[in-house]
Length: 313
Image (cartoon, rainbow, N blue to C red):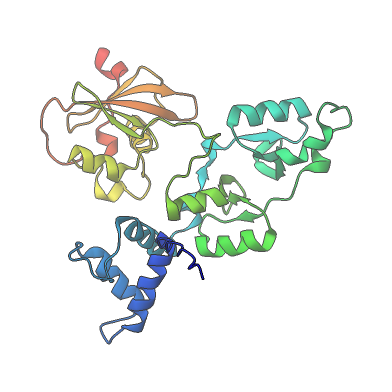
């Protein structure tokens, strides 16, 4: 009787290995604390040895993201208002298709008159029945309802809301009824697994790029804490941090307005922020010129605004 060849055992996936380690930790849980505390301690310690309790780099990243996920609020993950791509409720079929093509999104928010009056959302699948013949197309008749949530809502509660409403997008509205931003399921997945690119994704410039002259080119949305760590310098006084989170916010606070492209804002620590790209609503990209001389800690923003116009006269 011929013996069948054995099929090689499939190597365990990262998820299977992670679940096995979690079961081992749970079964060995002691008086030192709960499973969460045990995980946090293990993830904070450097990797030593190769025992079953050790995590791979991918498992560590996933666990760290998962542990912090429950602490996130909607405002931490939302696409800000300035980056929302939306369409007016009276738009024609061709205008909607063009807007989707330009934005690279399959869903768009629909608004009445202004973005503060969100009417719903439209998916590219809603347009297919009218493809080639948009004479009888009326956006208001095909758009879908969109849930509205506050920026303070917990992300875990948002997940439940998305599941209940069976939608992939919500509008974020503040206490005064103004639209603050939007959140999609993809935004939540990114928080857990990191950036996921598909065949239609567009490569975006890195948020911070070192230049050959010793300076940096940065996205204005770059987190201020991350920039300070890279520059090894405090850029904003502690009592002003409640209102400023990004490089763009710092520059606007210093200049007390939105500088135009080509303008420069001087920081007392010696750095010069040269505006590379901006529109009337926000700064987009900045050249951070190297520090010319070393100076002390951060001064209040109201005392340190200096633009090219100020110094030229």
